Image (tube, rainbow, N blue to C red):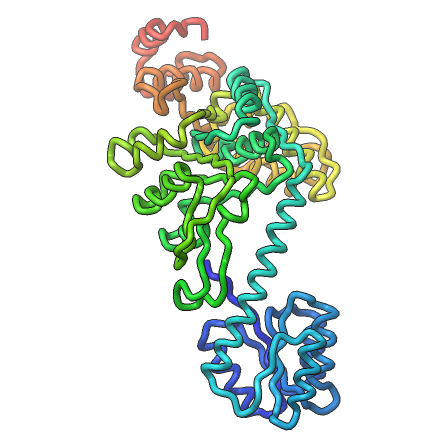
Length: 454
């Protein structure tokens, strides 16, 4: 979704003020307009704007006063001065004090629109650089912990540590919520690139054009609105790691372009002509069956082989039940600290229910359940009443075989009979009634599935 910029317009000429607000709102900006400097300062005390357009000469509080306070309170906000011909010297002085530019009355609308776009592009770049720096500082030195005692997951982590020092591409497969990005960060932090940036992008969240712009960047004038050169994520992540989530959502055209990046270690910005060399480690991930995507012609086989130098297949949470208590307490401590609550325990009944659920949303779903429970409890313990109603009403079972996503009908029937028997305390007459069969049929099924002693 495109960012909507906020603009404050200040002018004591009512007609100018009205026209500016109308024009800028029509351009898609969020605009507030006031007709005196004091009202502007009162607004700025409580609200940040991306751009302030202010008349220079006003009674009581001048445009210079607004500029001074703006730069004191919001250093990233840009200020454009509106001045009459006789006040050019003052406008130049304003620029020395940090104004972005000035425009003289009467001004042309196209001139104003260009000036506003350029100022806001500068704001966007500053904010983006600040965000990337904060993200880098947040992750720099942060140790990624993957909570597990599951043998298969331990093998995955051992292999990840061996692969990390190399620069070969990595492909991570697994259902949504299994921790694919977390594993990517784990690999990055065990690599020689650990002190460089780690950036992540979801390929499914962008159209083809926007994804190309995000990855490759663009040159000034590449398209309408490209008022300055923008570096893409490949360039920003150079020296570090770029994680491409949902790689199978890339369009065929983008797949061709990205294949060149992997092969030649270079790319061309949108609107550019010169190739840019790049040193970045690529880790890709998908929740789809990538081989089926290739068979259906939706994913390039040559790109798959380029990415699939080393691959990991993360198991769903239902196949690592022994990790559920560990994860529950990890998330409990995390959210108790964030919410400033003294929650330290999970009751036996609540834990039993948490262990019985199969988590179609995997670790991410479990995290949300625990966060909700911590928010709801007013004591030191999470009880059954703090868990979602859906969890208490239904125990959702998705009995999956290890290497195949769906169970057979017999496997489903066996597990369902076991569940019903457990619920009724082994009472076979009651179990048969719930199952809608007679006792003799139930007995035959118990014998078939070796459940006689259930």
